[in-house]
Length: 541
Ligand SMILES: NC(=O)c1ccc[n+]([C@@H]2O[C@H](COP(=O)([O-])OP(=O)(O)OC[C@H]3O[C@@H](n4cnc5c(N)ncnc54)[C@H](O)[C@@H]3O)[C@@H](O)[C@H]2O)c1
Ligand SMILES: O=C(O)C[C@H](O)C(=O)O
Ligand SMILES: [Mn+2]
Image 1: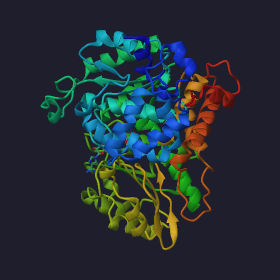
Image 2: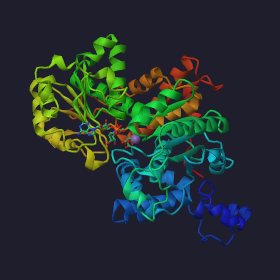
Image 3: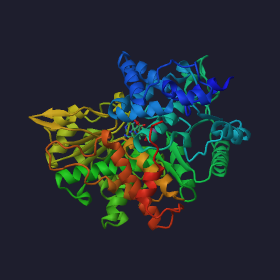
Image 4: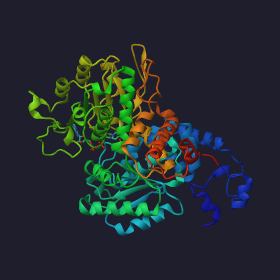
């Protein structure tokens, strides 16, 4: 290939029509581009008009990915200028459709790395090939067993790694050349994929147990060796593996599970925001977790930790929590509880109606929660009866249906506001429009980890922290306090996503300072605000 084509095909170098005449002369590009030299503003204007002409969200996303594939700077310039509009298209919920159809829609690999559990000997070569001469600081890795709420999507899940990293850059200014999206293809149990002649992954059921964990371990060790000061983000692993992997590595390397910790932070911040509006106290709340999997248990643990921070003993704090999963209310005599559920399980003998506590309405009537958080993947399960029943004993119930994507949410914000006659303090996992009820416009916060993981990562990279501790996580949740004017009727419980750049900087500084305070920072910088500022990448030529 000629140099001109190499440059135009490299999305990190390519400026397209924005190459100046001087650059065209120097780089061997004379005559291979249209003659008019555009500014990035002009390119963005032209590209945005094309974007607007697309009929469906899928077409819009595919178009944006075309820009991503050819010119990263232009893509992020556009994303930064249309954050709110692009977020649901680049990321959740539209990303669910492109994951389901990844193999059919495949055009190019987008600098992702594809690891195969059956070939651990290829880990190092793959990572080297994918990184090239780039210095990788951030990896998002998935094995796609639990993509959002849509389950096992095998190799197709690589798109969640690509998508999460796009949000990292747009929301926090992480240098896109320093990131690496990875899928670990451990097989898939989805028949539809195994039978699909166009499926691009390996064709076997999921490999589990010893071989799987040996592979994960070799991957971690290799990545840590090849990429010094790496921050390793795990996404959408299955319920069993997610917590096991995090617990194995959290005390030795800088690592993070988004579904457990990221969701915990954003949901705690949302609850603190809601209590700020209602004037309630966290230690007075009764918390009901509906769907006690990776996210549900992760959130409960974070909220419980916060209660302990406010002075409760572990036993006292646990008393405020109830967990519901497939079996109904979780009791300690059940033999199929996960290690994360077990501490929260209740005594059957404490309930006269224990046999009826398989039904969420009955559970709500019995325990009278003031906070109800849904991470169950079961749509429509937060019913009108449940909401009305919560309102009978609680002035401002906190109700967060967090399951993604759109069609899996436990309730819509609209229904929750109407059924509660404007009393419920609501946040949803996917973006929701505001709801006007009796003249008050209720702005709905988005309790999606995307509001926090970019800032958290920015703080980790800026401070070069060696570990991500619970204290740093708590600092992240608290840093969002005061960003919303709680005195405004209908105010959201979290800052809006359009403010995410500001949110990210706040979180990053709080996290980096905490790392520094605890001696975990490895940067020479002492001023953490400056460290955060200095590391941020801007989309400009
Ligand atoms: N808003 C966010 O930031 C965010 C973050 C992470 C996960 N989520 C969403 O939360 C949901 C769960 O994700 P996860 O990673 O925790 O998955 P998971 O599979 O680990 O957990 C889901 C849990 O729901 C339980 N469940 C299934 N059917 C149920 C029923 N009928 N009643 C009660 N419980 C039931 C499952 O047994 C499981 O324990 C997904 O929809 C995901 O998109 C949202
Ligand atoms: O990806 C999202 O939108 C949030 C979360 O990580 C999820 O798994 O649902
Ligand atoms: Mn996730």
